[in-house]
Length: 176
Image (cartoon, rainbow, N blue to C red; front, side):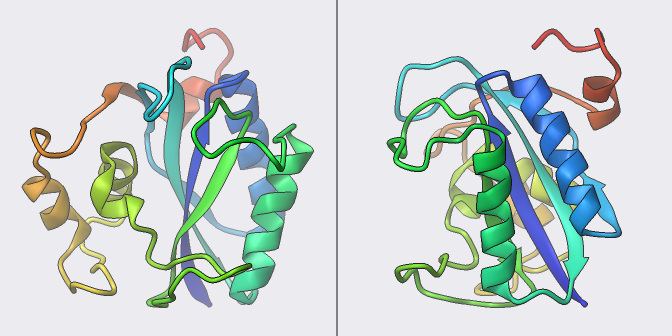
């Protein structure tokens, strides 16, 4: 089985869409582990704050099948396929890591590991929480060590607050 880490984000009907995405992913993958949920500012455009988290799954599905599944879930939850990159989203699911795979971005093939891992606090923090001793495939540095070295002065740390996925799932616990 191949360990896969997915980044999930939503800033439109975010509580509902994150819950629904988790439920749909649980139907496809037998074991799903989730980080805390992080609320953060929109980056690159004016918009409402996002909820972001990282989930870990194991699969024997090929990379492109996992990518198609993620895109299908996004569309099922109302994502517009032609929406600009920097815009509000009902749901965004990015493959952050697919085993130790290293790929260059090509049409139809995601860049792995995803560059946002080391550039965005809302990706690195939950990944370092979920897999602290896992090593970045390119640098062999653990995600916990990368997080400890994260320089918020050079890179934005837009995290506003954090809470557990359980708090999100329990109605009324998180204002969303």
